[in-house]
Image (cartoon, rainbow, N blue to C red; front, side):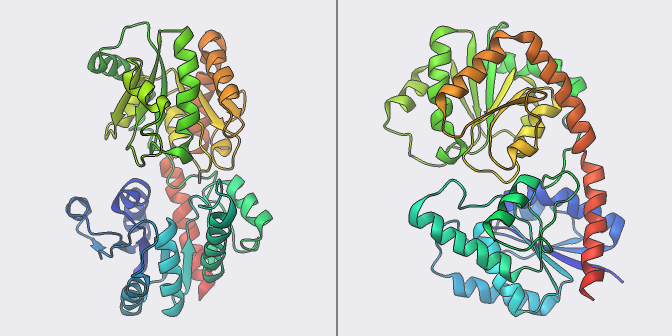
Length: 384
């Protein structure tokens, strides 16, 4: 008899990036019926396999005063379908789904804790979102952060008991497809990007991939690179991702980044693996992360990483073996790390070679999916 699992996130790209490949694996190898719930997105609807059900429910990011209607809509779907597992992630979707699934008496309410929103916040905002996080955790029957660092942080914060929390294999939300991020293609892809961006062949590329906003440490990254580029004109900062907020606009730093030919805003890229291949150094000076998939994506293509010493990214690399860690919001240490990797090519090559082996051993996608299948079967059996 087929088992029924429903995945809920706020927006479609989260499902597309982190859920679809694993959901396909569960269907083909574990006889799972799949239902997907997120905002209305025609492109997403048209690209998912025919055997998956798509139930659009709009859940705006931020405070949505229609939350009661949203919870009721989800509740009706859950009562109708009686899923064996409802899995949810992202802040708004997790709160609404946890409440609705609890009211619908879904046996396995699985919170995929891919980041803890209040980390990096302070004052009243931190208190409010910590309360919300506790509500979601209390209504869930199982909680799976995507890194051991975030599991340890959650336990220390009293968000849930040790018996509720677990991490799949070595962490991450989905593992990494090493056929897509194929190191054998690195030289070719690097040349293609250099040609596309008209970069001098001796350029040293420092890259960033993600939402371009304050929480990702973009302000500190621009500050650091302003210093680095002023003394080394071969260095180019490659920024890949959507510009999400206007916090930088109007500042002298942002204007400098627009005027500087060594800073390139490239927007979101579907063939992101090619852009990683063009990088010599990858920097993620984030304030908070669930895991930091971009860190293992970069390392899969042999790119040494610089990350802040926060739960998540520090689980996705090994200090002084695949990359370097720095304190949060510390421009000076970021400058030091970037300049060290620029100046010491032998050390950079050492980190690069270790990175490739590390990702292959710890985060290969097919093994990750096999572990997920075993875990989902275990959760269902345990709930009976």
